[in-house]
Image (cartoon, rainbow, N blue to C red; front, side):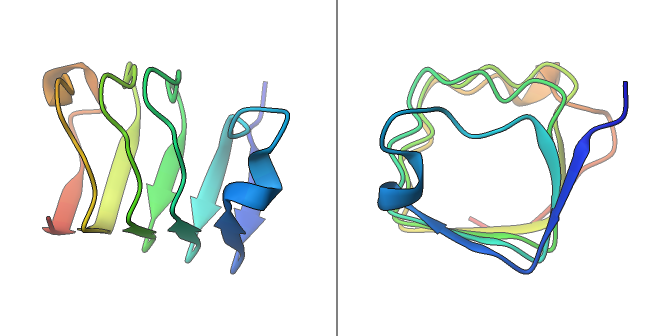
Length: 93
């Protein structure tokens, strides 16, 4: 099954009021002040994305790819980076 492709979008907490972040391939997206703790991000692909002030603590990262991603002022506790895709580049934490 092909992933949904989302490009050049700003996603903030008002976009996710009643649902979780979609399993998708995100390119050049900005995620602002999201509460994603304990979310399942398995299989998602993030390319050239920025996370600003997000809480990603304890997220599931099975086969998740982070390619040139920035985490600015984010909470990243308890993440199992070793569960993610073997190819990922974090540009700034």
